[in-house]
Amino acid sequence: MGNQVKTGLLLIILTVLLVFLGSLFGREGAIFAFIFAGLMNFFAYFFSDRIVLSMYRAKEVSPDEMPWFHQMVEEMAHKAGIPKPRIYIVPTRTPNAFATGRDPNHAAVAVTEGILDLLSREELKGVLGHELTHIKDRDTLISTLTATLAGAITLLARLGMWGMYLGDDDNRANPLVFLALIFLPIAALLIRLAVSRSREYLADEGGARISGNPLYLASALEKLAFGTRKVPMRNANPSTSHMFIVNPLSGSGMAALFSTHPPIEDRIARLKRMAGVV
Image (cartoon, rainbow, N blue to C red; front, side):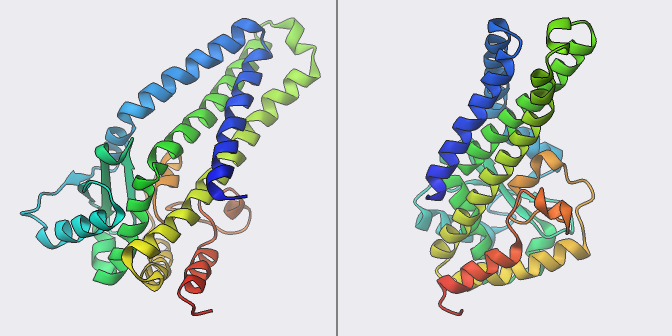
């Protein structure tokens, strides 16, 4: 099954889970779930990019301030077939990057000060190709909707738990409702992770093609994996970790099972296979 089809199916499943969760509390609950999710998606659609850029104190830079980087982004955007996005710098020594925006006409690419110092020009092209692929494929919107739906399921489940404790005797006596309120948020989290991981693989492939050499991005990922461990991002928010090219909250063992990104070794191996190295 292709990653695009898988993403669509997982989004449908998330929506079904949300409606099912609301229906546990009757028709009114299902209607409330729809309205609640709609409001959250509306807010996320129009304001998520401003929120995340503000969260990381990103500063927009003009062509006069960084002419070489603007030229690089413009050339890469032309190859990707999308408008040139706005460019932001995040004031942190942690090497990382992310894209945001609801569509290619309202997009931005943010890179940290650390990534600009760490990577070569060719490696930066690989990273930009990855981020521009996210924009071209509207992954920035897909990821936002997925995170919002998963968040709505989790919040509604918590509200449902409080409702049971505060006097909903019918639902309190139903063990199926209790189990659903526990396991539906877990299922939503796993689906969100699956969507995020599948989009990362696609963005890696697109970035390799746009940059012209899969090894550019493979080399960049190797350096970023080391760099983020050496200089971790202290202010990273778990709700935005899926946006970065490498997980700012990466871990090992059980933590890796709940990572928004595929194992970086697998990503590098795929890129090397694309280049015919292995």
